[in-house]
Length: 280
Image (cartoon, rainbow, N blue to C red):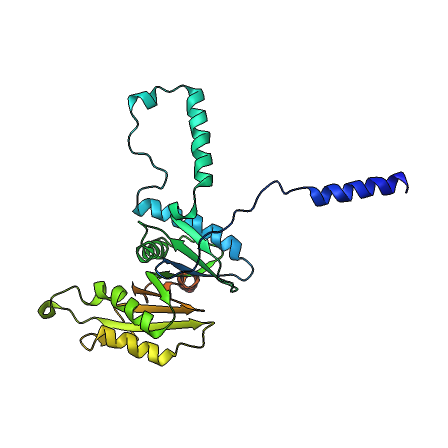
């Protein structure tokens, strides 16, 4: 064997034995009943970038609604008198502990859906996904400042269950009650509502039966109105799981579609430009 072949052989072995410098973190979050979160539709083949974008976006707005995740309460005098070396050492230790923190103690964790263009971001207490997403989309709609590249649509899920009619009915009673049954009967306001089911990768749940069962739980007192609903009941069937939520401002926020919010903005800007040109 020549010296060149020997070197090639050694290099080949060293490449095989060489371990990657960065270890990919395992995702411990799983799609189970009883979790809450956000279904996010995204650009194809950009799922990983979408997840990162969601983490950044959600963290910014969660800090506005809730106490920042890493915010400390009060610093006493002893803490203030620490040396610079101690501060640096404690800062490094804090950062390392945050990196090692399990998913259960974080506000958000991604769950693999196994489907193109769809990711799920699990939320942990105290984050309410419906409140968070409504806050985000309202701000984007009001400010017209686009803050996403890969996220297309955000559908918050209050809670999940197994995708069978019996479990879905039980979940509906829990999710719908705060929106339709909190007032006394004689003071109850008639609410216009719509039921929007979305069934993906599941052929066991019948769409019409699902709608009828949900409507029966809402009851006859409230009014079905598909064009101008006050509230929209979202039922997401995904493989063997079901997620449900009740959303407000569904039409105003363009069906919770980020892209649609800014498409309308661009149309309005073009109209204004055309008007100015015609006036000139």
